[in-house]
Image (cartoon, rainbow, N blue to C red; front, side):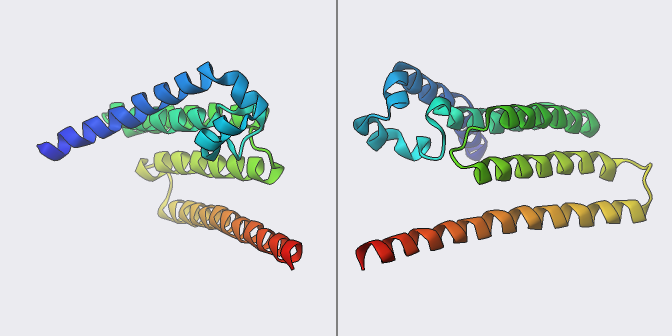
Length: 178
């Protein structure tokens, strides 16, 4: 019983309190964020660093996206097909918005985000197929392998991209200070 109350409190804080608080702070200090003032960046830079100045609010969009998907899944559990359809619609709109805005400073991060979101969309689609009786066992197995391959591809892309960034960072400091 106590765990349920704690889960509800944590969910409300993450899905409502955090985005509203960040939104308020970002809105009140919008000019400081756009200018990149040093005191503002010291306090909130970890949230703003990967994004372009004009899309300083994108972390709120990401948190809201996760909250919207989790609320949709929790509220639509009476029919899994409807739940997956809602999730796919939300993900499709998010992918379209992400592709239009291109919020990250580096193009590789924009492409990676769209690829990961597209893989999530495929996973939602696959959930509809897996609970349906229409496809054969062979078709379901092929879809599982496609999902696994795409998830591994996204993981490798993110992991090796991070390793490349780390390598470039170390190389930059090595040649700068030696």
